[in-house]
Image 1: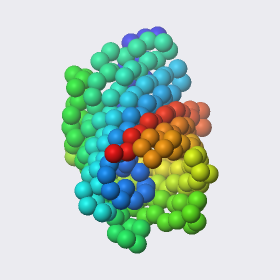
Image 2: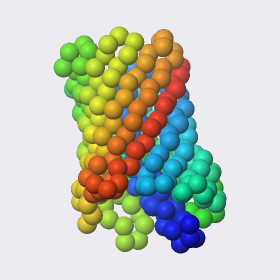
Image 3: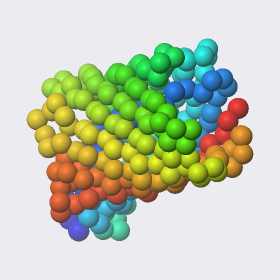
Length: 240
């Protein structure tokens, strides 16, 4: 493999990571207390390319309806055709967020993506993700959550974009299967992307929880018909 091909693959992985914006979830904050989580993701963003990343997060309900959160993405490794990228591991772009929900199921959020990266090769700029969320319960078991967000970058020449997402959960007791969709590249001059996530959450007890999921990128904005990026993830959470 040539150095040029490796560099192109590494840039493609970085672009995929840096264009991802996500709030804690699409549903109302906890009534009280907080939650900490540890998430591991294994990605296959392109042919012969793999990535691994940890995400460490915590959120806390300050007053009913008002939540503050922080997410620390920790890239672990990236490889193309078996060759590892140099200087890929480290801390990349922490996210601090605030959400406020009204009693009728409508919420608003502001996330700040901080220009912090411990890796010498990457110099991110600050960006903001703002928008609204709506959630409702069709039944005690079936829940719906949605989000409309606007990505506001500060990088010179970068375009404002819009993200639309929705998720449906169905509780089967200790197990809750879910299906989520996310549209990206809605406003920018690029092919629209669609991410489809399927998974299940597990309520171990009142304090401990876990989930597993797989995300598939479809449409040209996520790689096109000849390349379907796949991310497999698992999360362990603790309520406090």
